[in-house]
Length: 168
Image 1: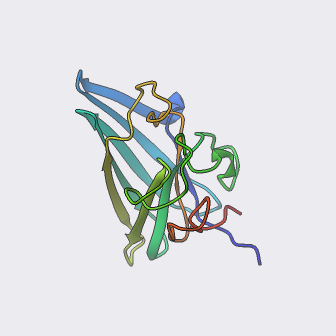
Image 2: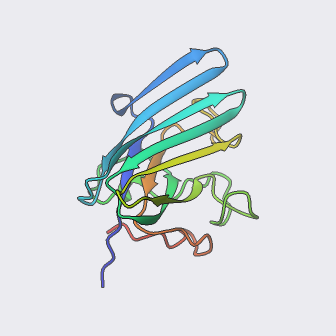
């Protein structure tokens, strides 16, 4: 049986698909819009703000199925494939095993799970000093990456994806 996952791809580094604004010399912000994939109809926005070396992501998503979903940063901002597969695998510039953020090994793109309410809405907030916005450090810079919401939850164990749902 073919599994179809819900994938929303955010183009982070392509200028026509996002806006990046710098509020001061110490703060950078990037706002992006989710692009529904796999005929999902899901929509939303994600804002990344960097201040004093900490990047905070706030994603507001609607049109989800009620329940637990995984969210990951993927290797590329390429959203050309209808199922989001053109975004590549999880962003893993340090070549670690997939896992739960902050517990042993994990990819820099392994954000984790969140829960959509009965109306299909969710908000995800995540902060880290392991990311940056346009700093040029390939092990930290989120520009040029994709943000994907999966149909299922991340088990934090299965390599290399966490079994969060197939892409088509």
